[in-house]
Structure formats: C-alpha cells, structure tokens
Length: 288
Picture 1 (cartoon, helix red, strand yellow):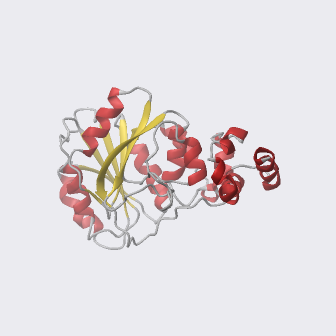
Picture 2 (picture 1 turned 90 degrees about the vertical axis):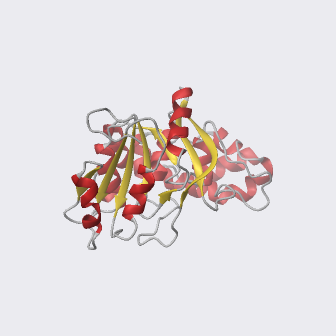
Picture 3 (picture 1 turned 45 degrees about the vertical axis):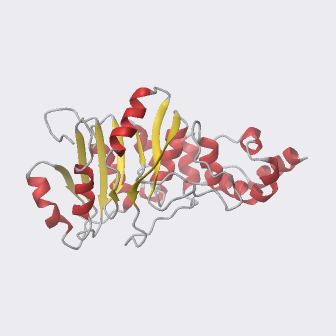
C-alpha cells in the first residue's frame, strides 16, 4: 500500500474511534497491510475518547500515515462518520470500525478493480469471518445466495444485510451526505451504514465479492442498532429515497408475502410518511 500526501488517493478508509486504545493500532495496521498498487488515505476521527486512543495514534499522525481529527465532546457514531466522510479525498471509500480489522490483504484492491471494470457498479461488498449466509436468509432459504445488482428493494424489505466494514463504494459528494443525514441533531438516525447503502442502491448496481474480508468484533463498547428507527422516516422522505409502488411488494416470493407482510408494512411505515392502513390495503389487493 502506498501512502502519500502528494498524490490524490484512490481510496479513503474511514475509521471511527471511541475508547479503542486496545484495538486501534490493529485496525490501522490491517489497512497498511493491504496489497494495493494505489494510494490509500487513512482517516481516523476520535469521538472524544477518555482512554489512551490518541496516544496510540501519535506515531501514525506524526509520520503522516493517518489524517486525524478529534472531537472536543462526544457526538456519536453518525456525526463521526459525517466528519470522516468530509475529509475523504479518494475516488472510493471504505469504512472500518476501530475494533475490527481486515483479514484479506487483497480485499481493497479486488473491490476497487471490480468498480473500475464496471461503470454500472456503485459499490462492491463482501462478508466477514463466520458469516455463512446473508443476514436476511432463514435456515429454510436454500440455496442461500448473497444478492447482487439493483438492491434497493431487497435492502428496504430485508434490512441492512451488507456488513458495514465489507463494502467499498464511490465516494458521494459531501453535500449529498449532509442532506441524507440532515445535520440537525434531532433528525440524525442511530446508525450510519444503512441509509448510505440505501442511497448507493438507488444510484447504481452493487456486486458481491465472495470472500470473508474482515474480523467482526461482537463485544463492541457501542452496540450497533441494526433495525430501522422512527427517525429514518423524515430523512428518507426529505431526500426522496423511497417510493411506494406495487412492484415493491410483488418482488417478494408469493409463498412469503403473507409471512413478510408485517415486516414489510412496518418498514414502509418507518421510512415514509405513508399511513400504515394504506400499506395494508395495498398488500391485500396484491394478495387477492
């Protein structure tokens, strides 16, 4: 991996840190170990850690290996993500949590190569160690395939099945990210990767790279909330991500429509300013 300030980096890796003194070095070294023939910008945003996270970063900062910013007060994972995204200079972006680390040394190179080879692609995702099937697949779903292509509907109905640290995507314009998250604190959602993945899926195709590329730490200090919250609906409505159409319901397999009804209605209700009664009537009509 090449790291230089003189050249425009091909890829930016965003690392959000909060009290990760014990793992931050491992995360950075896993990026430095990537075998990529292009420049990689490593960005670390420290969310006002109260441990020795900053001290661990001093050698990397002084040598210009890491671009660093520290919050004066704790602002949360989402604002940290926005801050890091604003610092990104690369054509492509990857996100790595400070307590996780890459295990596949060719991941970033392979993902960027796939994006460069196919203009229709907006992102490439893989999986993490121990993830045998997508998060939305039940034990009855065989074969368990990781979906590709236009994934907006699948992400809407099944939730965020793309691992947060196993995706590389075209870097969005900062103004669009700001609009997506609506920087007013009262409208910021509890997670950052789900709305970004939905945003990406509306702008291009997403391809799956069949490989486990990072180690996922489950005992995080700040647990990740994976299901949508009520604050998403205003963000989604303002940004115009979602549209209620009959074919969104029809894409579900007929034998799963009844079982998926409550989940589907719930997610549409959360994400859009549409009355749940209207959704229920739409589903009833389609089933008939």
